[in-house]
Image 1 (cartoon, helix red, strand yellow):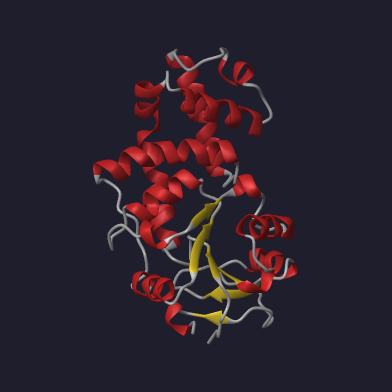
Image 2 (cartoon, one colour):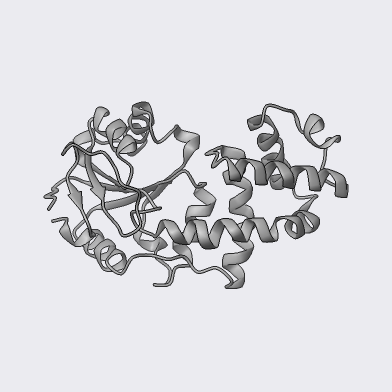
Length: 242
């Protein structure tokens, strides 16, 4: 059980609000399956090009070095970018460019209804209860802010976005570095002890705790075992937060 009287609840997504399996079994395969066609239809989109340039840099190259040209208009350039995206996904790289492009591909899936985000049964009622109690609810995920908005706007429980007050991704810093949480606290404008961060990864919780935040470890079905040593209160459901 976690007793929390602070102001803000900061939430991870995978393994916390939503099943890790949905992300890996539904969302990632969707990108692999749809990316080539997406690039074919959106090669001239400046947002796609910006993401492609960052993906190349994250892989240690310029876009010209990666694809052989400065844009994505040729089939060869699109194929080389696709291969790099798949390589980075296979490496489970938490890179800004990759997350940006994934979010753009997911947008078409969520808006078409092909994708509906999974959330655990206890999540919607808990979010509403916390919101009604005057708490601010914010998300911090390695997925882009764009992807987060799409995710919570299209869940199996409907649109949960009105319950959320803010979103953070890796542009504010790595989830395993304490400075990232200090940056979030500065953005919110509150004391670290007024924020409860919930995640399924102890390395993230360690970083948050170092920054002074309250923490809680989620033990959802299918989550990877964590070495906790009682540093963070462990719960199986949001219903265990008072």
